[in-house]
Length: 292
Ligand SMILES: Nc1ncnc2c1ncn2[C@@H]1O[C@H](COP(=O)(O)OP(=O)(O)OP(=O)(O)O)[C@@H](O)[C@H]1O
Ligand SMILES: [Mg+2]
Image (cartoon, rainbow, N blue to C red; front, side, top):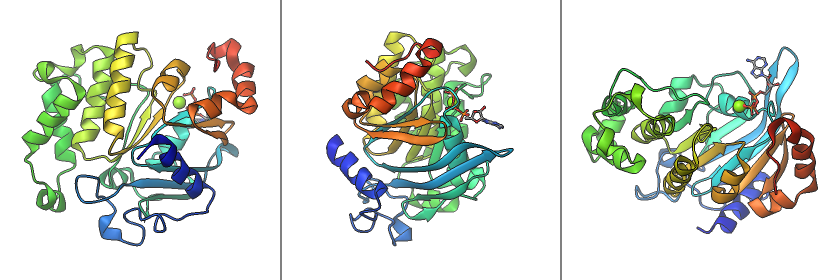
């Protein structure tokens, strides 16, 4: 699927012109297919967010957000500080109460407990990496893999846990550090380990909150390439401030401002959008991050 096709379908879904079933996405009216991925017999997963609203003491941090996220589309969610980006991720993963609807491949998500949402294959990382520092890289992955174990998983799984851990170690490029305590990893490596923990949990929707914050240029490049690899057969959303990183790796971009979707499109469309330029120019003094 080409990026433009991916966005075309997303835009059509957003606009309410197509349903998942009409374009043959799995799980649309076929519940048993909801967790399938390409390579496992399914055409793709997707996440549909409608009218998502989060209110803190009367203040709408997220205000009627619609998002359609599909497999293979590396979507960036950008916006000034306080725009509501993290709160959107928190709401989708059940960390804050929200109204509206969130469906994963036709299955309702909103209102479920966080562990149920994780079990549905929706995983997230935090702005600050949360790995077990005293355990090795491999032990961290083992634990994450264990969290996903259940009778159905055991039945469905073709490979044992170790294969899955080995595969994740390869994907995140940390094989050589498998026996190293996570606490001594470089900042970037901790973020990769967190992504690895989502991989072994079979998360096919990944919401990553500022994964390259604090990384150097080389780590950013490696992370971008990692995200492109994992997004090929998953639904990946990257919350980010870094415009250069976005330009280099985004397939599509959603701009959030004051809790609402301000604009959505390709990197070129977003950069050319006067509304977006205005929001970023307005906050440039604070963030020094202006689309060029
Ligand atoms: N638990 C909370 N209680 C009250 N207000 C909150 C809470 N969490 C977030 N907010 C407010 O909601 C708004 C959105 O915050 P959020 O953290 O989602 O923004 P963000 O886009 O992720 O910002 P940043 O780029 O700085 O991470 C902010 O005004 C914030 O102060
Ligand atoms: Mg945030």
